[in-house]
Length: 68
Image: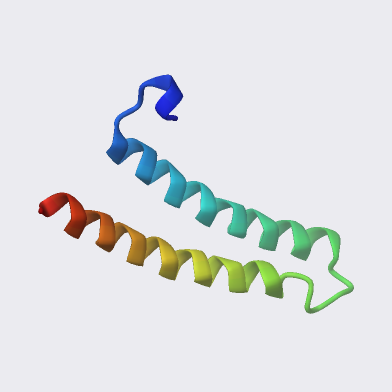
């Protein structure tokens, strides 16, 4: 996004949002296309939780860093 001339807050927002959407999409696709495998959506669900935690920590770190 920096190549397109976008400002840093927008680039940060997009990076967090894309990571969380990919996890949700993976879970939905696994549930739909691998319904016979009960554990198929589990990796995507774990990834969604991980992305939520890491995204929140990263946003807090960026906020503190830019406040200085």
